[in-house]
Image (cartoon, rainbow, N blue to C red; front, side, top):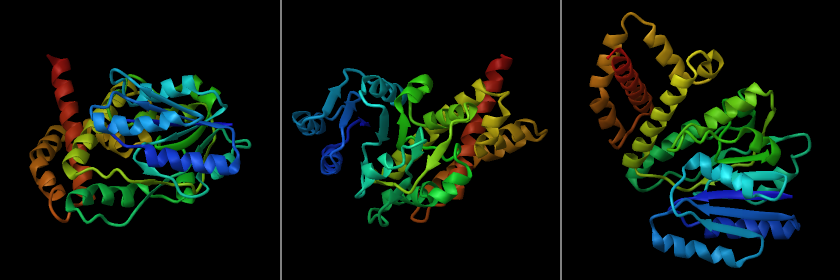
Length: 305
């Protein structure tokens, strides 16, 4: 009935897989769990994960080279044998009834998004920024997500009809972290495919230290600018993303160079706030804006030359 797909990289997925096996066996579902390791560099974790290959209904595959977040999800869909795919990020835990909540809502729904939740505030201060961002920006009720169903699409926890997924797929030109779900959500919107948001959150466990989180955030901004460059005439896609909308407005502003210069020079200030004991998400927003304006400015100069 379902193929649960878990891409992983340097993360121990055994507890997650055992929880899924227990839920599926208790409900007597026809299922398989596909785990593909995207060329992890931590051999100890790889050895720990290999234990799952001993269980029935498990496909465990280790890739010899890293193919990226989009390509690995597409590969999983191609290997899946069932009609519905459930994509789950490796650094997650599932609540009771997780699989049943999805299966019970598949009637007339080809795409279902379950949402995200976070645990209590971390004791390690270096993890606080990532937790704060998750709690304030990523945790949304199904009612709130349903108000902007395509904009609220996230790839960390969703069910999709296999045939539909293989028709769209994730954009494999986006190899690094960030915004592959932005493009996928937009493709669903173009096709008028309904996204059904339910209260079925994964618990996000993989909190990164601020240094890594900020680096990944800026990588996501680079991906977003690539999307922008490829879709400059696509007002619908741009209007669905606040950062791209602001970028487009500033690019048309006669004060563009001054605004860009001020924000770029302020990057150390934003970083100082983010690395402090009281980080601000406004500082993170401004850092992202400064970075995408910096990329845009360099791109303009390159084109002129």
